[in-house]
Amino acid sequence: MKASWNGKVIAESDQTLVIEGNHYFPPNSVNKEYLKASDTHTVCPWKGTASYYSIKVDGKTNPDAAWYYPEPKPAAFPIKGYLAFWKGVEVHH
Image (cartoon, rainbow, N blue to C red):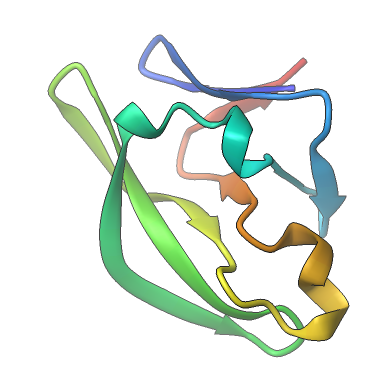
């Protein structure tokens, strides 16, 4: 699977985990040069508190377009640190 935005591959892995229709990419499969930490947080009742990254590519920014669970609840522990994408980030084979 690949996650791409603005012509660049942000993440690529054949080891993604799918939860609620979202592909979560392992941390080591993500090009962190395109990520900028965000102050945004949201809470999922069963996964826990999510943290976000904005994606920056060639001078363009996609705010809060990636999220992850740094300390997920036990039911979601397999996705600890894995990143998922939305807001126009294309996830494809």
